[in-house]
Image (cartoon, rainbow, N blue to C red; front, top):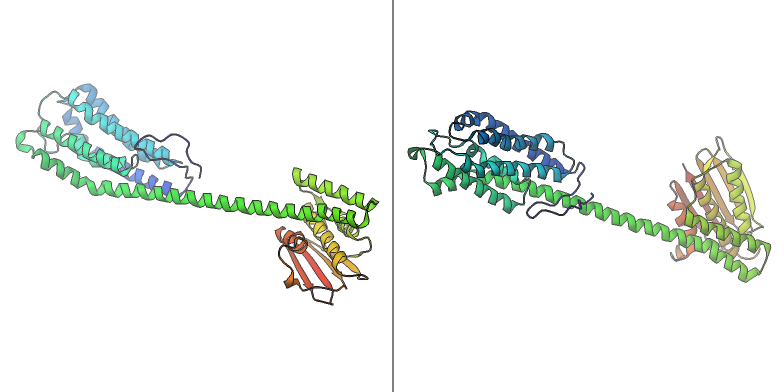
Length: 402
């Protein structure tokens, strides 16, 4: 969710963009419910509206029904398709303001004559509906204040406009009017509060998901740069310390610089045909150890491979060959076998050296944990299996299924 940056009006609910969230659904249903009440009471109050025209100024008799019912109808009609909570609350506020204007201007438009009616002034029939709509615009405490103001004003007007024999005592009448509508307003306030809780919960969930995604992304980047440092920078420095200046060292240093440049600028997604893919993997293996023995087995349907897949295999193969070169022991032979099939690629790096216990390797050892196993597992569809034992050699199998 994206928080609305507009400053909140005092008493009004703050807004969040919901885009189909459950809180917006509740507010839409509530707005339609309130508008249904306006529509029902319009039909019931129509005779009283016509009757009140005899004691009210013409300008008020025309403008007051429009001010009350047009915003009331618009609340449900437009609110049912609103995409934000703020729009629904704005529509509800317009309906409340329209009713409040009608109530407050009545005194200035009244001729002073009584109306012989048992229903009272027409808008007093549904002040509870207007107060119910205020629960969509205001926080609960302001909605209850609105109910009290509307109930008191309507009771006072009815006492003034009706004959004394038809009127009730003012205070009991006001208390009964408030009590009659209080349950509905309280229910509306609970619906609005529930929508607010759903919005906040969803926003917290989205924020937590974003934080988790950011942490995961930082972890992937850290692992990528750890592998880059180990496979290129550290390997180049190690070669320089052991063998001194050479053509192989210069080539390895150039590869390291290119790898760092690619890490900074990003490498575009490419597709490599079978000969290019195999040649790139073999070149990486022979660069790590010129004495490596490489073989290729091409299965049915073998074709092009994504550049990201070949890049991952190239780096993991080179690191596996370097590991074998360092740790297999003198005289050990290293073989690289490439098996290419349709949407499937397998590379096996095996040596007949001293071997080791894979379970005893610390997770902080970058060569196996990050540069080989971690790199393959980060590749979509990639897997890595390492089989070794003391005095039994080592076999590393890299697999990808597209």
